[in-house]
Structures are given as C-alpha cells and as structure tokens.
Length: 398
Image 1 (spheres, one colour):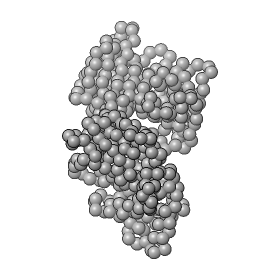
Image 2 (cartoon, rainbow, N blue to C red; image 1 turned 180 degrees about the vertical axis):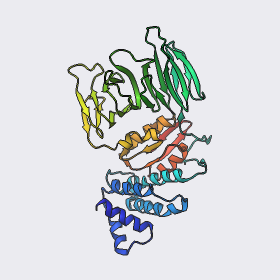
Image 3 (cartoon, helix red, strand yellow; image 1 turned 120 degrees about the vertical axis):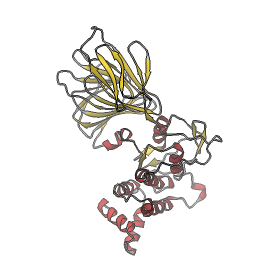
Image 4 (tube, rainbow, N blue to C red; image 1 turned 60 degrees about the vertical axis):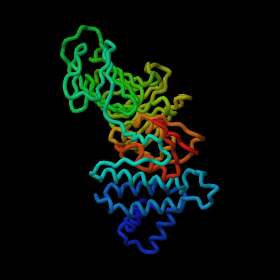
C-alpha cells in the first residue's frame, strides 16, 4: 500500500467516514508484518496537523490501540518473544509515543507528575534536563553556567566571555599577550548548552559532552576538540578551514557548513550527519596520508564503527533525527531499546542497567523531552518493556 492511500484510509477513520471495505483494508494492513514504519510515519504526519483539544486526539489513540491489539501475541507463553518487523506489542504500541508527544505539545497546562509502576519507595520525581554547563578557563578555574544571568563571565587572552539569553559568546578585545589560551565547555548528564566561538561559529553541545577550543583563532586553521555530541553551524572562512578533532579518533574538515557529530563512547558507531555545505571526514585526527577520507554531501551520514574502524556512508538519512535532541525532541524512529535507554540515561542523569539480555525490539515515534522520566516510562511500559527505579538507577526488567 502506498503512503497516500494509507493516509487517506487513516483520515477516513479519524473522521468516522470509513466504509466497511475500507475498514477491512486498513485492518489488513495493520495485521501484516513489516508495516509499522510506514504506519508510524503517516500517523506522525497527521498528528502534526492534529487539533489542539485533547479530546480530539481520541481517534488517534483508538487507532494506535488497534495496532497494539493486532500485534499482541495470543499465546501467553510467547508474550516475551520479540521479532523485529512484525506487529508485536512492542513495535505497535510505540505509536503511543507519538500521541504522547502531541499531547504534551498541545497541552498548555503544566505536566502533572505521575509515578511509574515498580518505582522506588521514596517516590522521587526525576525531572528532564535543562540548559547548563561548566566552563573551565585557561588557568584551570571553573565557572558553573547553570544559574548565571546575562553579563560578562570572564576575560581571557584577547576575548571577553559574555552570556546573553542562555548562550555563551566570545567578544574579541584586540588585546593579546601572544600566548594562546584555551577554554573547555563541558556538559554533565542532564545538561546541554549553546556557545558562539570566537570566529562566530555556533555550537550546540548535547548532554555528557565537551568542546575544547582557543579563545582566539590564529594560524592556518580553526581547530577544536570534541567528545560526546554537538551540532555545528560553522562560520565561513575559506582562508582558515574549521577542523574538529573527535575524541582523539577521527577528524572533520570544513569551510562553512551545518553538521552534527555523535561520538559517545558507549555508542558502537560514530555518526557525522551533514545538513548543509560539505565536509571531509577523516578516520584519524592528524589528517595524514593513509587515513580513510570521504567527502559528504547534504543528507549523507558517515558511520565509523569504533571497534573495527570500518567506515560506511549512509545516503538520504533522516537529518531531522540527527538534530532532534537540539530541538527538544526524542526521535525514536527505528531505535533499539539500548539506543533509547542511552538517550534517557544522558538526558535524565540516571544509570541504566539490564536484568537480562537486551530485547531486540525497535521503536518508532517522537515525543517531547520536556517531561518527567516517570511520565515517559508510563508510555514505554505500554510496549511491554518493564522497569524498576531505585533512586536514580533505572533497571530494565526481563
């Protein structure tokens, strides 16, 4: 079934105008294996235009529940067996994540905290992350940026450091000692931050990440060092290329472009996604002969396996997914359980553990990051993934 036909049937269902034959056609699609991704995408497209009133979302909930019932095993003994690509409870019910994201976007009142089943006895509410970072100056002193208001933070060699509207920026003073000074901006778990570097390059730093850079760029290039994840909008300067050394394992060379780098050490693959312009990706930080070098065009993603150093290029990727974190969204499209848990661990400043092997289920859908962990777990529990929360430790149960 093509996407337009499916969208037509779903809209007819939402408007309570679907015929008996169309209802059977839609039900047949839901019950067939391998259709969850297309169904999820159509639901998301329609939900983007969903009405503002919560009660008007009821038809979407009903249809997601229908998908859930279609994928639920009838044999209780097989209820914990997951098969990727089939309408299992785990694959179908994640559509409720989409519904939850729309609900929280459309609801103007504050989210009311609830407690997930099997939570800790202290009923601790684990809140989402926020803007904040630690700035380490050239002399080794540190400044906590979480609670600082607008104004000058410090002066470094050749630059004033100023916070304005939650962003750290460098203003060149023209007075330098000739010795290059370096700063490091780091975000712990549960924090992210926006910085404007001395050359005008804008960088958004995700949780559990760090960027090391000079307070003024001199010489033939502009080199920074990154660990974790960041989104870059590089200021153009053809005479001085911008270079990112990624976790001492890879390098990126650009002139002016927009791209995202995901290089967390607990992820098996380092991903660099290009949104605009062009970049050269190197499998080493020295940009030396013998390294693998690839040139990316917009919509491409380099994928470097951290263990084998195997490099691959993915074409026509979902660039929106790569930068969803920057826009306040969890994008779980085709994400494994471990990928989902890694995101939650970083954003909610928690520890995740598994009581048994990790279930091979896939998630589809998006939701806002601005809700308590307890609310998010209530949604994930509907996909037959269960948890126990002890303090700030989230244990995934078999």
